Length: 218
Ligand code: ADP
Ligand code: ADP
Image (cartoon, rainbow, N blue to C red; front, side):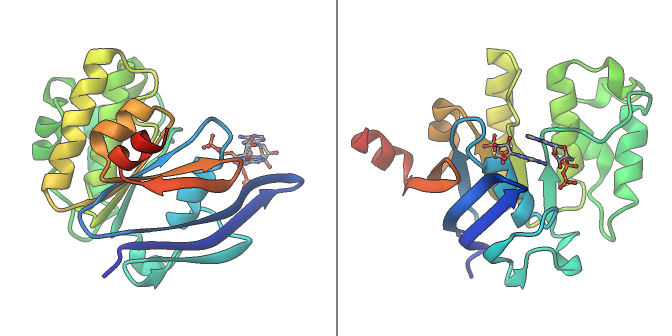
């Protein structure tokens, strides 16, 4: 079964057309990339897939259900660019809080270990480095043992080493059988990680192919 299906998505904010016409589908176990310049409509697209925004038109299904269906909440893990965490909350408190949101949460200690956060459990969010914040937000997205994870610009602002570590991490998440929708504006990142990539420009699909296919075209 196709995991995510987006057909002719359109979304505007007042006068601003954020997404004009975007369609793609994501197969089980894929790492599917959404690549495009700033302002292309990537975040809006994934927010609609995650059910955090309502499309103006078009059709989106996730795991066979319409986007936004409450059933999906525990089955999709979402890591968005802007964290809603308060600076004062500690890593441990955040992990415990988010665990309480899910019926069958993952073991947060284990997840923290996998993400290299064990030494930071008592550190407040506001005191974490950019890479640590990023890893915590990935951990929070995975706490519910989701079937689908949506990760938005997860390496923006990271140094090259932290970026490579994060790439390894993403491959590891896929190896657990999670289907991944990954937003990025780095071609290199999309090329390394993704099975297929949709390139979005000015709210519409400019190309949809494997990384090798995209490179051959260019
Ligand atoms: P919503 O209106 O869907 O609740 P937000 O809470 O994200 O959206 O944003 C509130 C307001 O802030 C928007 O209506 C818009 O005027 C402005 N805004 C937020 N993000 C952006 C952006 N990326 N570009 C332009 N304006 C923005
Ligand atoms: P990307 O993720 O590719 O940078 P976005 O989906 O964030 O693209 O934004 C697409 C367009 O919609 C941009 O022109 C942006 O300024 C605008 N936009 C995004 N969010 C809002 C908002 N909440 N209110 C108004 N305009 C927005």
